[in-house]
Image 1 (cartoon, rainbow, N blue to C red):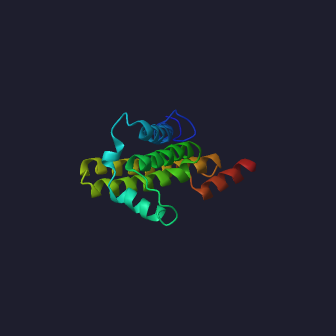
Image 2 (tube, one colour):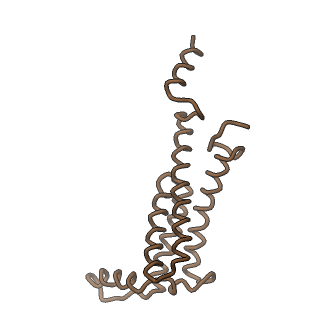
Image 3 (cartoon, rainbow, N blue to C red):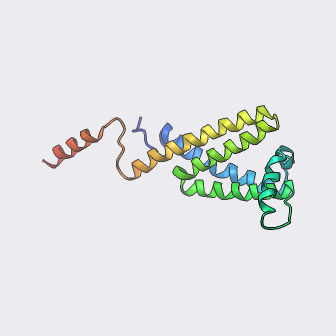
Length: 164
């Protein structure tokens, strides 16, 4: 077996990183797009009334307009699309953003007593956390600071022997 690395798809670590990176890019984008069309589900049904009400209270400090639950879901869709795109380019940062976003969704679902879906979304948030940690390993590998099973002092010693 080759050295475990995130730099290619030839081993379980690389496969995990790239599959999760693709999934946490595509799924938020697709879910965000669906907020505009409601093909998968009627999204406002899963929105607790307190969320748009809280937003409307803040909005009313600057304008008398009110946002409907569907309009609120449009905003959520935009955030999800942007988050998915940003995960594609900077998974080490934006996978954490997606994780926290999913916790907000979990809080919303728990307040509606959709515990089964809340548990699923919490599991997704743990996947996003895992992607963020794999992205850190990928970042270290790109900078040449990670070698499987070799500590930094051992690498320095090996470099010294190679130079001699």
